[in-house]
Image 1 (cartoon, chains in turn yellow, red):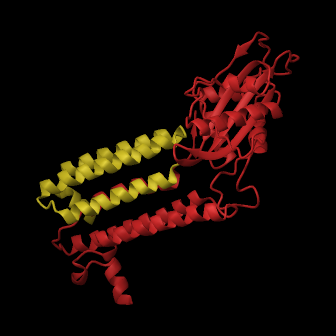
Image 2 (image 1 turned 90 degrees about the vertical axis):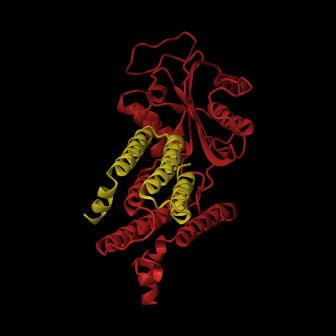
Image 3 (image 1 turned 180 degrees about the vertical axis):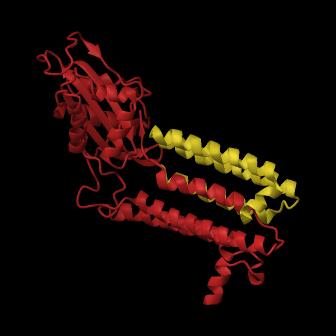
Length: 89
Length: 297
């Protein structure tokens, strides 16, 4: 419930994020069913890139776009890409 | 000690109202630890190849037996292992490693049939399936059976013989296991005992348009080389997945605690959005848990 309050502050941003994550989920399921590990990996790359882009726009809208915040998103995106590279061979 | 643990998990004034585990420095430490684990795994597979099975648990026997299981489900005659056909499968895998490609036809224009001919195998009907990066035979056969073109090869009533190549090597700079499945009806073979009665005796070539071969070759002529053949080897991928899942789950739990406390207390702070982090990390966790390795061609 408390997380929902945070979402309610910038609903449009979170709708965009939800679309990105739903797209990632569907694409992942599709390639997963087809035993295509290369494209499963690409789904992670694209999702991580879109997530970073979304973070820039979201924090720009909120007026708190700072280096430390972007580093936080960047590290999570890098970690996701490393995980994909090492577990989806 | 308890104070430090509290700083790690609970946002408070001393950690700038953000759980320490979510600070960029700690995220960096998580990445460093994960990479360290990866390099240890890589080193261990090189120094002690019997402990971690980086290649796969795929063996020629298993591929043949599971291929025949699929055929027998439909009442088709089982395929007979042919050592010469296996030589052509191994040669194909070795050629892919040597010339760094992943396709039915080599960049030099070699077709799958050139490999059959090079080992002196005479056929009237032949086919090829390729796969790479699978860890076990069950997953490999399931992937082929899910693909109509590969399934057609496995269930083709015209084939009588099979040869398998399971070869480990480095493809495009990545350590890989390639599996090549070569099917054939030998030239001048007697009529096949099978369910289907539409047997073509004319010379015919059946090519899988997108095969993917996993060939494990340490010596030419030896069809399957399994690095983890002795004993039960631990999958390094499984280790990576478990460690990744633990770290990501921990971050998600801390994010939930952190956002609950700060939103409840209405603490003003400049940090990333916890809700978006949780959504993103849950997608990655799904990948970690349900991601399937391997590709067929």
